[in-house]
Image (cartoon, rainbow, N blue to C red; front, side, top):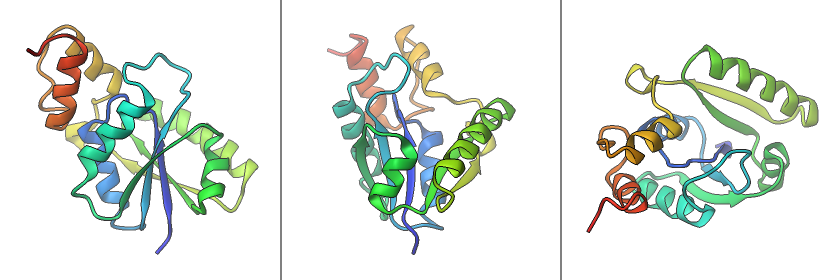
Amino acid sequence: MTLALYPGSFDPVTNGHLDAAARAVRLFQPVIMAVFDRPLKNVLFSVEERVELLRETTKDMPGIQVQAYTSLTVDYAREIGAKVIVRGLRDAIDFAYEFKMAQINQTIDPDIDVVFFMANGEFSFLSSSTVREIAALGGDVSGFVPPSVAHALARKFGRTK
């Protein structure tokens, strides 16, 4: 099968990310979920924490591997031999951004394709930043993230004993 790269900041990984990964692994094997080490946004969890949370939440998903990377995504895809970059889309705003990125990546390396998975309706509103905000304000995020991520968020915001 074809090796696929599913890159992201995964800060934190959500049920929406995991849904896209589960759908991707039906078409591609392996799927490398790669945590970008230097996103252009403030992150709550360190790269090590994000990798560990992602490994924990995907441990029962055959065909998923977790790594971290620091280079251009298309360069990393080339480095690991990925022929496909997987991205999830929640709405038209995501599409506009991801379309531009796909065009740039195609220009850099026309041999690497980008495949988009539309979010299931139950995840179309879900973003890592929304989850972080809810958790920071003491809200219940258990319906949006795996249990280990909910616990990590509670610890991060001093809500556990």
